[in-house]
Amino acid sequence: MKQINQDIQHQIDPEILEIDENSRALIAKKAIDRAEKERAVAAGIVSNGTNFIGISTKNGVNKFFGKTFYDYSNTINLNGENGAASENGILRDQVDTDRALESALKDAKLLGKRVELEPGRYTVLLSSHAANQLISNMAWYGMSRRAVDEGYSPYSGKMGQKLVDERIDIITDPMHPDLPSRPFDYEGSPIQRNAFIEKGVLKDIPCSRYWAKKNDLTPWGFGNVIIPSTDMDDTKLLARIKKGFYIKELWYIRMVKMEDLTLTGMTRNGFFYVEDGMIVSGATHFRWNNSPIAMMNNLIEIGTAKSRYPEWGVPTSIPSMLVDDFYLSSKTLF
Image 1 (cartoon, rainbow, N blue to C red):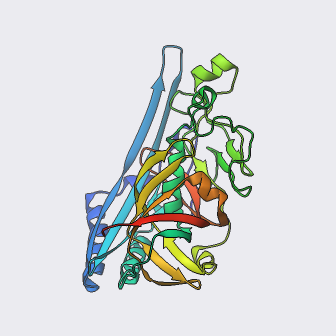
Image 2: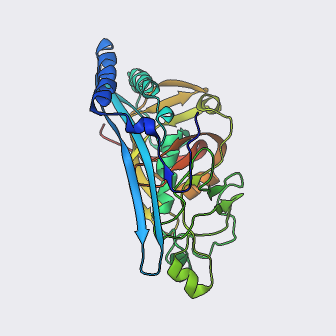
Image 3: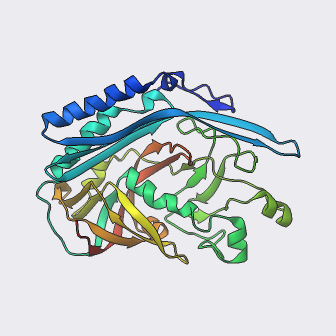
């Protein structure tokens, strides 16, 4: 993959800027034509552009940053079953629309003849996408040094303690070669490499400039979120499941219990029953209740990561995770 020229001010790929409405229409047509050959229906979004953020204060802070984005997603409906996949990046060659199309079509075919199983605690493989959807919620609840110090964060009283499996590191590094990020936070403070979790231990929590000055701390924030991965792809991880599920997507994620970060939501689109290391069929969807902290304590194996670049949010590189005791709490109506 080509390397972007990152001068700390911009991450701009001229090839993304060349994508116009005709280019997007051709990409959409290719997906629609492919779906028609399979007697399926394709839907999705193709978008690209440039985002900028600027900060200027009366105290002389003047910072500016721009980045390109290219997003592609498709859902393939085949006989009432939906397979979905997405790709995005800040470079055009990070986005493989053909790969997303074929992945969604493959999932739609596999989902046929779904089996219905009972709720319970299962061994599951969360894809990189699903693991990202679950773990990224950690940033929304109590991810503040002030909240920790004042006692209303799930991390209060846990600084310096083992929080998750020792194989887990969660870091931010704006100069990471595979996941560059903006070089400053929304307060204008420079983003530097830092660890939220290191070898399972809660090391540090993002801190505002106000709280840092008041308590003699160092202000910092996330520019990106990186959990180092392994070379274990999803096929290798599936082989380790005796009886369980492969979860490729989650949705409707909501807070249940702030104290331990218990969340709830539902499985969506690619949800498969696995037996003796093989995908047997699609499965009827479940509501689930789990905490990303508990999940990373029930870790069996870490897989490979897929970098994701949300249009406005923080880029992430979170690997797939094979976990035990994942609570699928009730059946859904679809």
